Length: 124
Image (cartoon, one colour):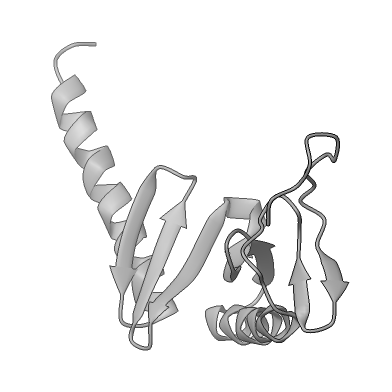
């Protein structure tokens, strides 16, 4: 959606009929897609386990992930059998279930720590 120069763009979505979209997005996002993202985000958070909550955002469509804020862990569903775990924005792994993705990211981090400890051995 093109806006005049005087109108400020906003990331606050506005509902107009079937649309629920912000002027900064302009992707024609729908209210139905917003409700579906909430439902899917709640289901994913429940599947991930205790302490996970859903996070829904808009950017050329409605998106969701489950997050465990305390550990800065985010789980996204890439497809029906592929989940993506992102820890701290630096460590990423996938798995066939949310718990498998989490286990894979933790395993990868432990492997990285062991490699770094080996590199540091003898330098102290």
